Image (tube, rainbow over all chains, first blue to last red; front, side):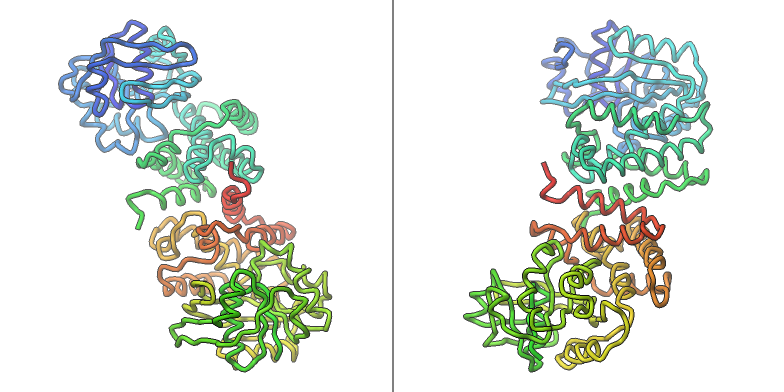
Length: 307
Length: 307
């Protein structure tokens, strides 16, 4: 499969590298890593074995990337204003578009520009971060869960899932993408925001009883917000929450992406992880009180707003 | 009147200085400022005119302070473990004890040790901070509102209020100290905590619409918590909240005491301003959801708990 990676951060670089190693023709749109990767290739460190890709197809603009079958979107959602123009040259040939970006609203943005039937979305449970230019560190992964924006299990979704799985990235196609997105939010909303706000890693939050209680309460609010959406089946609140907490405990001193964004002075993905989910819940009569408070505190701290 | 000041921070130093200038015999218990003040006196800067007290009665232990009529308590509540032993030598002679400390629980602590009939409490609306050793900066003040721990307007409360007022510190005796305490919490709970947590001053919070909304919601929760206590009359929620917001806007870029404590690496007054009010509300069936969340976030950040 010919695959274009748009938004080659830790997630895009790692999945792109795995897919190339799996035998697919992967093309990377690069900015700051272009020279390092074009000259020396792409290096992946991983507990499952490091590997190096000598020759990597690097591009500076989407116009040069040519025709592909799949566009894999890993762009940070705070850069979504740039998303449609980046993808338009690749979409012209009819490629499917899979966004693995965080939160809600990404599929809608792509569907409005390129048509709903072109768009898939997925949630990635991945711990990875960028090392020096041309290096990505893979720490741990759960499966990708992807599905059609329009819903239902299609041959296309199954095929893309198989492409990932056969390349060493466990991936499952799901019929209800909206449910998968909200399930991911049950984790993202408490941990991304609280770690970014307080500067403390997941284990420190869970070791502090009032914060642990707050995490459970935030998760319960998100489950209630999800229940008000048109899901194929409800998220099983207490059991799902207990599993998220226990998975997080196994992750040790984990620093979520939003905490790293904050520490490195980047904007935060507040609209997709907080703003749009809050709107979707409010529209359907669910007020996520603590989520709104967390959103307000994070938004206050955004660099553009500071003094 | 012979007055002992215990806890001579910005509040204790300023009120003590005003009372001495007003003709009263004030004795200060001092630690880090002892030498500076014993040698060079106490200097007050104020928009209403600077003044200097050449001779100040300084003491290093309460045992040396002798007999007084009133003990004025300004100790930070995080040091309340030391409160009773500091006051015991002064209480022996039958002095009244007036605590102007923040939050709830201080009168109860003193009453348990020295008898309920000895204790008064008050809320101070004061903007002051310490300068170099021996100097206190007075910025602005509203009135002190003080009352008997046991409730009711007594000649003693009226006399102490007159002592302050005649010394240039507007002071009112109130029959319902519990109500005055909760009214102060309507301001303290949002602004102290949010400024300490976010590092932003009151004007920045009020200029950010989601934070301004959050401040109103926190105040509404505190008003509900207050309504569940045995108050002589309810706090008039919306009108009182609107007045607090508008008074705060007039204060400009104000940094509340808890924000300064945080910036200077001191512990925060979390138990008296958050923990005990939350208990009092919960006991009477009111869950202050956002207040509890703010308390959890502040508590997580306390230095003793870090790393």
